[in-house]
Image 1 (cartoon, rainbow, N blue to C red):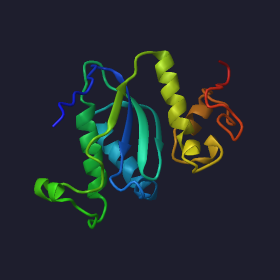
Image 2: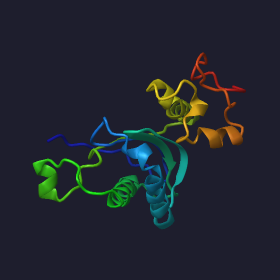
Image 3: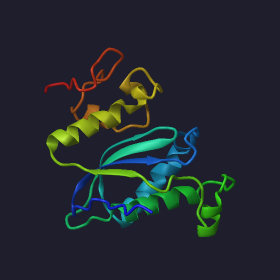
Image 4: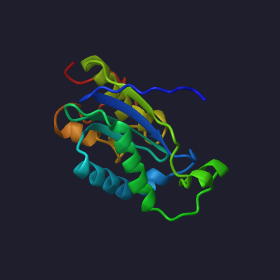
Length: 176
């Protein structure tokens, strides 16, 4: 088995991709309120900032900033996945490995994390997150996707409302 090591920066900012086991599923968008409740539950007990997020049917992307001195993003993801899964009815297919470990078959075990290095890296990942529903063909304009922090970013003046439309370049940010 590969010796996988995660980057751990106390108080760091991270980009994540987290997937549902059944990539044909619409589980996350169909249960977005349960997912939001799982995030709220964990953030109350183990605070962190969600700098950006997009929830797609079968995966999500997020940028988090952890509290000073804290690098426990893996623990937080475990709690979020567990809280979300507990709210869903059982019945998903289970592999022998998941049965042996008494796991649900909702989430992929692994996820992708990237320690954000600087402001430029942060901005690239911010754009990637918000353009992702267009990239996957769910909508033709970023503003059409309801499960995204893009709308909050527009209200805060970080993006123009028409950013990432049908003919826009995803890196053509307003004012930069």
